[in-house]
Image 1 (tube, rainbow, N blue to C red):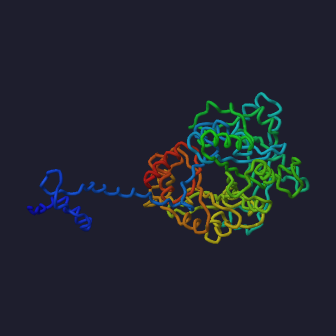
Image 2: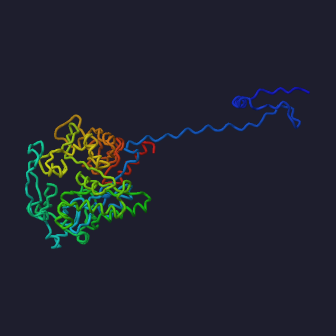
Image 3: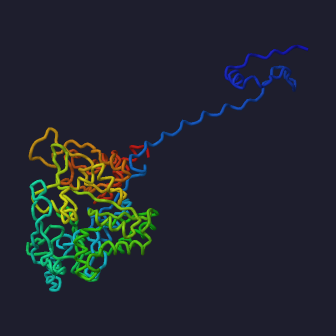
Length: 482
């Protein structure tokens, strides 16, 4: 019998045998009349495992979630603000939340309207020309000046502010003047204006319609006055309906607007006893009725007035609360905020109105210090700062007399990091498409404005153009590998 000597294995097979550690036995004798060497059938080596997919880079938000697009008064860049059309369009454009301002009507109903004076966000001026009942409700009594309680020095702003309490012995005298948080309103003809608190909800719907407000000369106007004013309940209903039709859980984002003024008006209208909080109580009632008063409920409650949020917490608010923070102007040389002015805007935008009444001369900026943020955390879950408080706007090299259009440098302040360290999310306002609202560095491109905020870790943006905000967020998420 001739000894068969196995032939040298081809290189691929030899490598496979070595890989198998010599565990295979090569047959010395073949069968079936084949005298050549016989090798076992070895399956092909498995394909190498695919390389793991690149992991998206983490987001800088407080909880790592996608930043929110908040439809500021709906989609007022395209439709009259705080109307059904504006809110539905915002939801369809990708907004996660529908933001609204709240006042109390004469019959104690929460109404969705930005300003309590009506000449600049409804068609009341035109209606009054043919409706004598509406015309007769214009408020024309001037307010009275009151001395501030804090030191009357220039660093604290004006030494007097206007009040609508024209007769200190008559709480109902506040229904005669239209002075809101120290700011008088006399309408376009300078003779007076209409207060939302002088109309019932039914009258508002019967007689008036919403209009555009910001950039009113640049935004569509064909629907002005043709869309009814909404109650807060109707905004909630729109959010519920759109959540169902889109499959996305939309939140509502109500603001207790001018709460000190609203409560004084409401008490004078019989909505509550002296010293009560009809505005906040009505909001809590609506939240409880709609199942919105829980920590994870689809709602954020916001206010510039810390006393309003603190009262809500003491009265049983369990949902998320947001302390809004204002400012008056920007020092474009340093990027620092300017809070004090020589006019009424010190009282409107420089500090919470309750601080003026209490004789507290501090500014909104006090809330943005580490100590201030820690205080906010005791009653709120997030802050809503003005954009330049989040991103410092400067002109380099600085030229006196220049403004927003000349800003050529932006840089994150420490605010997002400081707020996140305090456990607070950050929702910043207000992003708009019109060139006059954009820093020069963005070269007229509104999408470009969102990206630095998203990259800095902003948790949400208030936008008049939810469609633009949504597209900008998509660009940002693509950058992060999502």
